[in-house]
Length: 171
Length: 196
Figure 1: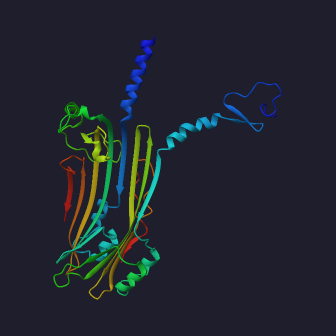
Figure 2: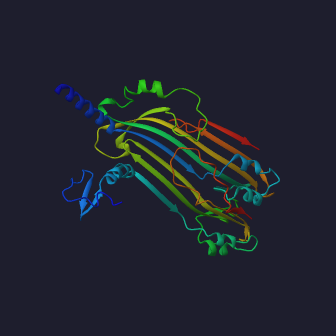
Figure 3: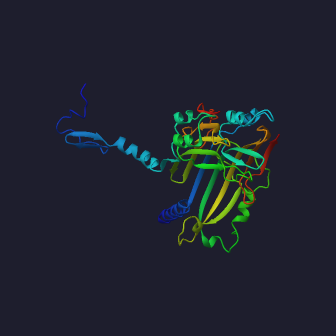
């Protein structure tokens, strides 16, 4: 059955207020008007993500072998450390005892509608710590790759506890 | 009829003016959520060494070497807030001290009660009334102050493990689960501390 509007007889009644005729085709205005409140509500919605630090590759971390890899080898694999932890012994106050690599991600969801606003910030990080012995050879290495755990969302509601990352460990 | 319309317009204008300076804000921050009491219990005092600690807890967020020990700290923080803000003309907040509005409001919103346990849910109940100068927050030549009914809950979990540098064994471990309602003088009102 043909649509009554498409095949309106000449001289039939003009389109209603919520319809416009463009190039002979009538477009309903109602859905557009209905979308306006939604557009107004969403204009105060912000999703923001910040990431700090150098990327840590899990393959590079896996290539660090305790007892074999040297301090220089670690620097070659992971780059310059974000933090150097020095020994605190009196006779070697500046001995580089451990390297720390960190990459942090923060996700923020901000929503505002007229007088009401909410914000949620969720952050976590990839973290690698490499310990060296007196000869500068790797003694222990530990890592946690949780940078992808943060998520966007509303601030209320109870989250299920974050699963322990599979991508973590220590040797 | 005309008088009724005028009074309606007056009420509408006054409401619009008042509401323009109001706002309800609900916030939540979770940072590094990985510390749990269960992790703490996994560490065996005097049996575990540094390698076992790293295998069980992962890399520490903070490391410190003292002449005798290696100190590892694992930390996560949670923050929940609810603020109701009202913009006030400065003449309603006379003098350098708190304005006359604070008295009655504090009667309702600053109860001298024991702080609640940290709850994940929002909103947080209001526990404080503060008046802040808007100039401190956004430099301007405005003559408004901000009256805020403030609700805050904080939780900070910390696992601290001490490894002896000579024996390479865990000599000390502690777990601090601190919760509190943010007040002016103190952040954490209660801290549950377990030490071995």
